[in-house]
Image (cartoon, rainbow, N blue to C red):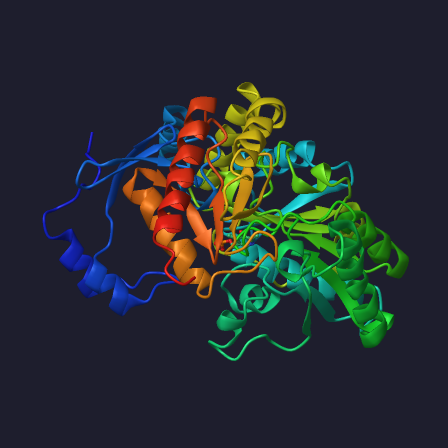
Length: 457
Ligand SMILES: *Cc1c(COP(=O)(O)O)cnc(C)c1O
């Protein structure tokens, strides 16, 4: 058998010369040098120097079943030999593709029975965005084209994905957002809730959706999109009042409710999907990441009967698709990934054991003088750093503060992510209690370090 490509001595220099990285300041990165990851097993990764890390971020929110799953590699190998590629365009399909669509439908809410495949979450954003407009047009509502999204949301990096997202600095690069997308406030109580209780704030920001619909005119609005819990924006867990109010408003005005399940799908919240955790059923839902645990690129859009009915019976051709939509090898990997999640009861484990355990472990940080809030749902958590607990004051440079604490943790052998001054957890769903303790203890040490080195922050 051929061996995998391994590190060569000058890989860092080659990388600096030839490789442009996503979301990176290349000048700074080339000066600092890239970290070369060479190997992984379970919840651990190793770099080229041989240093081991606990990956408390599951790669990039995606390695739900953990690393080193031989059965996925075996299925992929066998599928490659049997049928490495075929398309799903001209009246054809492949067995893994179709069976994966069925399997996904089995796990979603009862009215989500169809899947349109993509290769990533970003592509899934582009797919549902067109689908939503096409749906209303097919019904004769030509003007229902406007989409409402949220500030600080993340829906990917394609033109539609970045436009739907609410990251200002992304919009500034490439003249975004594209026409027809509007952003309302996010349910980020800690930073933006002022004197309101979290519950009142949840209602207030949810009602911004209603105000925006009325401002644009109900006859012009196609859809509202939101992550059940904002991920890249900082694991913003909405107040308990938020989703019920959003659900009410979307139903009242009959606009499509789109749940971006790219992170919240496939067990992360202790449910198969985030919409089940928050007890609503979206009309469309992009998925990716945990669908294959990142072993191969694959994504898609869950399509409800409401939308599928129109697409199947009214639309005719939907002129949209990707060469690799429903790629048989990626689909085979996803099927095996889902089989593992089922067989090992990972959703239940997160719901009943490791999720509550993480919540408790994070809560133990609440007494730290620099911790404003520590929240989690399932195995998705965040610790908010504050300069002053009583007033919820932030450090002067929140991004630098979070990055500095993150670097402390990484040096100590635990990979976390920082978004601004929020420290984020999203470990593989196989993580054990002792490993949760290790991750949280390491973060506590990082916060202690910050306390001793906070300067005038
Ligand atoms: C990662 C992510 C995306 C984009 O997915 P890619 O596979 O990186 O294109 C979209 N939405 C959410 C919520 C995400 O976290």
